[in-house]
Image 1 (cartoon, rainbow, N blue to C red):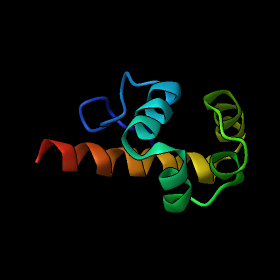
Image 2 (cartoon, one colour):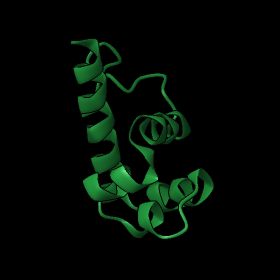
Image 3 (cartoon, rainbow, N blue to C red):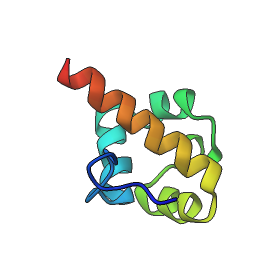
Length: 76
């Protein structure tokens, strides 16, 4: 079952935009504390993070979920 764009808060947002936004908001160190994956803690870069997240669905889900939570908090 696919999500409709009206119900999908990530519709139209690229993974690169998500990672960049989280890094801008939290910084690499804090992001690595929220989501404990090596690409955020050891020599982090957007490029290496994207490569890992595109291959690892569970990690991508964590990043997307944190992005959604962060966006909801910033709107409040």
